[in-house]
Image (cartoon, rainbow, N blue to C red):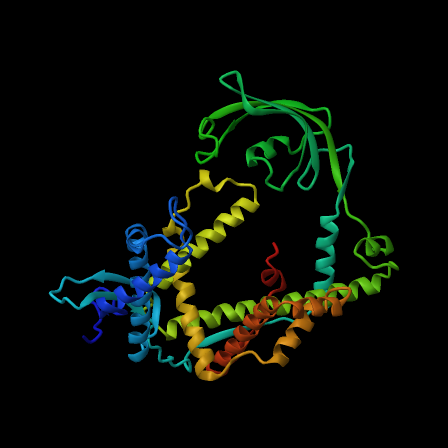
Length: 434
């Protein structure tokens, strides 16, 4: 019977398989005899158990194993002969027939789609362009200073950016509620650690001030008992501390890992790191556009079996991530539908990328792999050690090869599409607040 597509799934195929009963019985008998030679049973010497008993005890198991192996063999030969690329695993269904010589089955499975790469000549892609100079280095150093801010007591009203230390007691209908009390509690105004109305009430206070104010919790507040409720807070401001940023000097440079405290060296290192990061982010934005372009130019149907397998892989990765964060996954049931769209996109892209790499010969060359390994190692103190680490395990190099191949695909698409350069804004590219 010829393989025919099912109406519900254009990639689904059905083929008939026939297994000779005599072949199954012959192989089953040989297998049982081999088992009997090593079989031990009370009342019989080792290997001397009567064949009828061996067959009675293990016949069903042997028949199942032989039949399964025969089906795998016949299925494999049939799809190879018909040049079918099977996606996932077949579903085997027995057929009811009058044959006394053969067991007949139907194998239902999906095949990989035939992909004809679409035209990319009209695709428009914007390439971000950004030169790193003194201004970008200064901005980065300023962020590094803010990350190392210290605080010292000030005698003035608290303002945004200040750290305040307070005692507070929250009451609902005059009764203290759980989680509504703290002593010597520090937080920085403007960082969103507390509700906006709470921070507003504290702002403008000086050390020693005490006040009482009403606060209404948001309707979507995480505590259902307090969501949308109006409560009353008593606060006492114990201390107001102003921020103190470190100077960019030799001490700061030493803290940044420059052994001799040379500020110029520190700036040069920050600039080099920035250039690497900017390059990485620009490549990421280009890659995102290229993948979208490939998806748009190549609408394909993907095998459900591959999507289901990818959903399971994503679910397992999510469980592992949650467990590493100390969460108990058994208390948080993970639903397959959460990952359905992501899984379908990943499978679709994977099939398209595989076709592009194959048809355009974009495999990673050893020279490309070595260059990327050296680039990754350049930011470490001992690059040669890092390079040896990569080459010590084929799996590590495999990950590098994957990145190289993606880069080859990006370059290939950029060579086909309409590419225009667009000046990038440093803060936007780096994901920083203006």
